Length: 463
Image 1: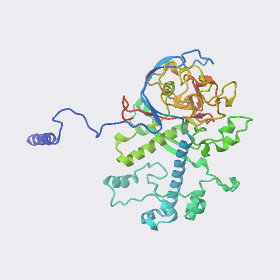
Image 2 (image 1 turned 180 degrees about the vertical axis):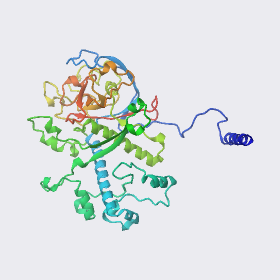
Image 3 (image 1 turned 135 degrees about the vertical axis):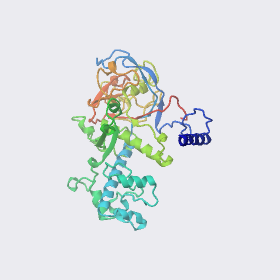
Image 4 (image 1 turned 90 degrees about the vertical axis):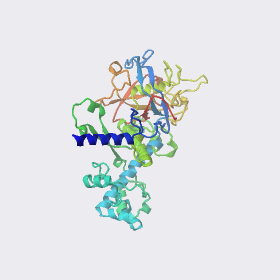
């Protein structure tokens, strides 16, 4: 008993002497105060309550958007639709990651892995081997993980937790391939030689696959099981846009030039990406989150509090709230009931005047930063391209969904809500309250997307 009392007394003395809180309850401090950082190319949407749905007669009689009050929390939203240039960054990252993985695996198969440590002595494909860490200088944590798991990364990935060497630049010019091993790996990424013509070897875009995992939090919260891995979901999908949508969406129509050039030609860099299905849009959101967090980990050594909230597709309520731009009972994002300005100019890119596509100044899509933004600073919330949301379409969802951050997600429902109307739609679909849907695995020449990010806090600071 005396020994126990002595230990307790010693612990009390040590704690009292080492603490600066004078015995008061002050809470746990996590370094400097949190200041949210507005993501590049996004605007802050303050959140609040609004009247969601049709305030006037539903012209087409859909009756799937009855008027009701809804409330959404603050969030950030992209100023414009995701552009071809931005999506190409995603495609190029997957392309480079695929090439590096294949090079590293082949180098390992050829027993070249250790040669990467020899610096200038490493030649050809050896330079692309997996990174080899000097274990004599490694941290105890690294040694423990390597001894017990064989790596620090995803053990289910093709690299089995080993790290790619991103410091060495890839060589895509065939005349500058460093050796035949390198050429063999790179050749496997292109379409077969018998499918090539005009002396062109094009990348086989079907091999550009993105793999990611997500945790089904909603299902886990409603389940009594303690096995977290039961709710891990793996997604592996090709991510290159379907450029053939410009042909498949229109029968007996000459759209070959736009089919050929729209995604890859630099003339269309700032135009909204299309031909991306719902699953590909979600994969882009995951990659954008990973990209930002990897930067923060490198800058601040991976502090948990520094990681950003996930980028994601907006809920249907978030999209409509943002499209209204803070205006009450507005039919369109610009507020008025008309689609023509007082100067006689059309206010969005759509199909006016019984099908005169060029009356609004555009034949197909226009650049993402076209026309005037709404009062939140968002461009093309009406027209140009319809936009994917994360919501599943149900014509009665307004009757049973919550009024607080309403969001109807059903993994079994393949119909996903699209909003905003597009360049090929009539004015009805440009209304902020109009609902439409497309199947999740469908890609269209008139559907794109923009992303949102949750705002941590209740007020805007340092923006």
